[in-house]
Amino acid sequence: MEKVRVRFAPSPTGPLHLGGARTALYDYLFAKHNGGDFVLRIEDTDTQRFVPGAEDYIMESLEWIGMIPDESPKHGGPYGPYRQSERRDIYDRYTEQILKTDFAYMAFDTAEELDAIRAEYEARGEVFAYNYETRQRLRNSIALSQEEVQKLLDEKVPYVIRFKMPFDRVINLEDIIRGKFSVNTNTLDDKVLVKNDGMPTYHFANIIDDHEMKITHVIRGEEWLPSMALHILLYEAMGWQAPEFAHLSLILKPEGKGKLSKRDGDKFGFPVFPLNFTDPATGNVSRGYREDGYLPEAFINMVALLGWSPANDREILSMEEMIQEFDLHKVHKAGARFSVEKAKWFNQQYLQKLSNEEILPEFQKILAENHISIPENQALSIIGVMKERATFIKDIYQEGLFFFQKPETYNEKASKKAWGETTGELMTELIAKLETAHFTPEDIKHTLHELAEEKGLGMGKVMMPLRLALVGELKGPDVPDLICILGKEECISRLNLAISKFSS
Ligand code: GLU
Image (cartoon, rainbow, N blue to C red; front, side, top):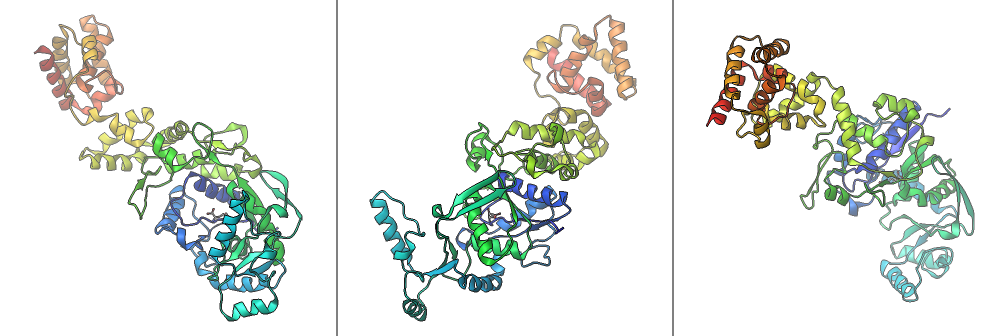
């Protein structure tokens, strides 16, 4: 059997959005599931929409996610170059070839001429299409005599090459996800295959490259479904075997209707790009999942489940497990609704799986950014007690601010509840006990129980004011853990601070 080869073929017209990341992921999962190759091809024939930096951004996104292409502009490979702008000589060969068939012709119409015709149609309430009906009346090598064409060529009048859409043929198509459907060629127009500068358009370059690169499966967004019939006919015209196709449905807005757009991200405050992207034209920065604190494993797991259901409705899958399980037939035909809550849930799940040591470097980075320097073992202990409640690593810092600073104020409601007339005395006795206590959670727990017992008080009467003194409010991890992390000196200092605040 022929080796499965799948390509991800983005145009470098901006950052990779969620939909693009999902296409790349399904390309990758399908290729790897079948022991095949994952190829990155940059489709940069449209120079007008080219955005500098976009290609590097795409590569960096794939690397962040952990999908390293087997072949790409960066890694090279046996079927390169992998940037369309560098494949001109290959395209020239096939341009010559298709012109010799009955599937292509030269069209000399200028943009102004076509605009005028379009306007005429519009005035009549009709829409102009360059097709089987109109081509006979336009300036092309089908309508003109051979001499006229030769004359135009001699005069070096620029021309494009158009596909001659066959007349009234029913094209039967099959999509792996959507099944069978058919299209009548009379509904399709004569697409430009080669521009007047000799560069192929997307359609032509795309099928040439898929053929040359021995691509067996084309998995891409549903916006390309209407082009499938043309592509199949192009393969026929060139005498090549077409790959198999699978078109992925849209990713929908959180409310479920319409395509998820960058504006939705701005509006609801979530990223739609894997990494931050700075628009080189405007300097505007779009937020990325990486910079928002998502773990790549969580991001990619979330993306994978936008439109695919693994067996037994499993939700948490590693890349390896996804590769094992991936099945294009289980990809949904309907659009997938994006939910930022779900994205966060995935991150929270993955964060819990990390060891304290794995979280440490990122946590230390956040501490450094906030000019906090604490010993490594203290940082590890903080991670240990705060991780459970955190969705992002940055939450461990934000929710644990009290580890790094004494309370400046005490929550009013909590103070009323926790601190009574005699609490100051009780806390002073506690300080005395802490002076000689052994600072392990077990021993501290014992010390606190001992104090409560001696005083004939319930545990709450000891714990609440203590927590208030240490944190400033009635939240935070287990008190014995908190005490051990803060250490003797800091605890005593905070208790003294509270005693003096509440006694004044
Ligand atoms: N360059 C096209 C895009 O960016 C690729 C479409 C395809 O995969 O055929 O969407």
